[in-house]
Image (cartoon, rainbow, N blue to C red):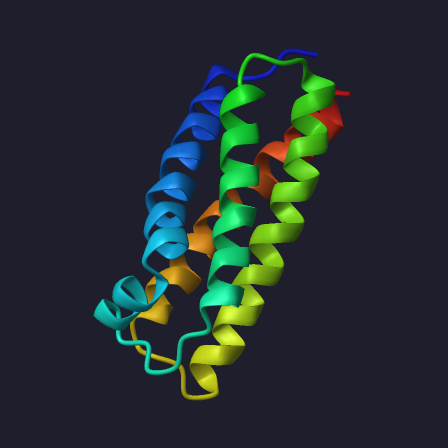
Length: 126
């Protein structure tokens, strides 16, 4: 089974997106989230999210040349992470969260569609 070059590229895009958000969330959670409209910020929880983004993002970059089996395992994790993140952020927005959180709902939902599509594609072929 062959990994599509477009999926390998998506792994690099995911790395860039994760790191772009992880760095300010880790080093300046209050300043970054305040700019986006958050009123209440827990720096411990924010840094845990940043750590998850670093872990998933860096592993995406490291795995971009791996076999289909590695991609399938990574995609399983990415589908679960992006689906639960989308639902969790959506719930929070509907519960009075900041309006900018809708952007995060969209970003995580987009990644979920991408990861689910490729996961199903590799599962069919494998």
